[in-house]
Image (cartoon, rainbow over all chains, first blue to last red; front, side, top):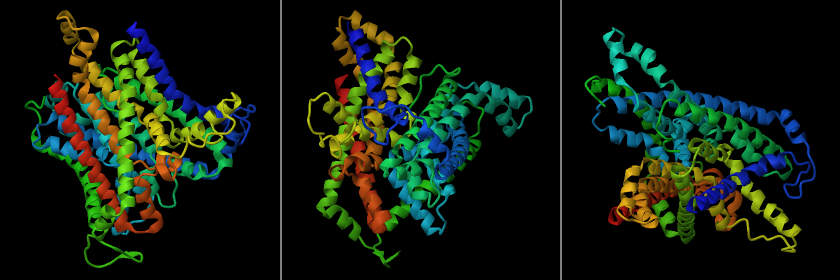
Length: 263
Length: 286
């Protein structure tokens, strides 16, 4: 049967996606410094090592900060822009939306170095703030994509009712629009947070001396003896991200019959 | 949808913060990149006056041309391989899977591991003392580790095809899902076999997703830095590696800027040509 062949292909494809990723947790519990088969025994010492790693914890703190601020700012900008293009008839809306989505079509390295040049010209120091700006470039298009999909299934009559009952524009926005949009907003927050949390190249150029977690990991990859610890970290990130992503996907699909849009 | 309610001034006001931020963080830096590429490095600053010397260097030197050609070639291969592998998968989920949502979640989960570590995983697999080599040694299929697995363009293609799979699956899935099922029934009723029906209805109608996925993969992979650095070796290094060298090590920012601009334009032109050609082909096939 054709279906059967497709099903087997799908399982094979899943294996292709999962097997490389599963090596991370497998070797993170392996009692050997060398990342090679055969496995030599079970240990949790690489995880214990993480607890004593101050540089890693500092980088983790930085990434959480950057991710949180990026997620909030990107989602705010995404929310207002998505509302503007879906609910108002604006001349040039397509062109403006195209401009905002431009970072999707520009390699990250170009985004990173151009911002680096601008900061140099303005004599601004490299910092976590500059990383946030760089990450917003990457995240705002994602946020808009998620939120536009949400707005398109949105009943404008509710807003009009609110206006008819005497609420001002902003009060309507906060008391009617925002709560109705909440699942979309939360999904956007989670997606942009995870995107920022995982972003390496832009941060690599813009972070200066303050490492984010990917930059810290990048630095560790050069030292073979540090690898098992890095894999333990990777396994933890995987577990937490999976939990967050499942939450995000459930929220995004809550009440929206549309399938997932984009990536 | 835009109805009577909103006046356009409110709409522009809502859009303006986003436009302002993107203007400041995207348009201004890109402009500056162009300006910088017309300078030349003098010590830690730029020399006075304007020059096209960087472009002469970028376009004239064969080593850069090889790097551009390799970057585009690797990305094109990655795009093709990823699309070919992902299409049947997306097709399965859209038309035959019983728990679509579960499949979609299962397909996206691996992509939320750290990108760096996902790429690094392939170094564990392909490396000299890696999974494949230690496996083959134990099975006595080889008596020395193979060194040809890692540090070449092939390793870069495999790694990127794995790393970007979700960007192919999801857009293709969405476009397949949108296809009106009654069209398929009509084709069958009119006597099309499964293959003919696929070629005449399903494939052309899913082309927007395929084209979108191709762009989503081709553009960023051409500028990828992590993968060629970790698994590419000298033979698999790409344009982003050279840009990074010019900015961080050599300190020749104008040359780095010119390399970045040329690669950005190159990618945009190729992507544009591809979209035009693919759309024309999809139309002709219908």
